[in-house]
Image 1: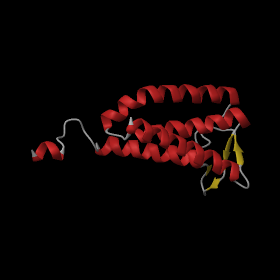
Image 2 (image 1 turned 45 degrees about the horizontal axis):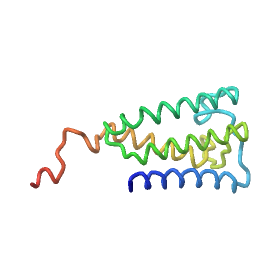
Image 3 (image 1 turned 90 degrees about the vertical axis):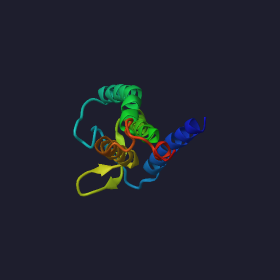
Length: 141
């Protein structure tokens, strides 16, 4: 039960932080494209694709994350961030970006998604919690 509460807090924090910062941005840029500007298209099609990706990632991501030892809160944060951007698409027809870098303009949800990808790649590479390894408790006693 505590784990579920912690995951709910992560989801609420990510959603609130993303939506509040977008609302407070002085000059948000409406980005009709998807995935850091890599893909574009009709808003309805992008929303359908985003919802499908959320569903597949939400269902299959847990099994994969458990195998590589990725913390469940990372997946919750990523799914919530993606959902928050999808809410923007539905409500405004585009995602509101406001963090300007030399390469792209992003928002908090984009940063959370990118950090989650880096974390999952790190877990895949390093195997932070491989199933075959013994824990310190197993070794000590």
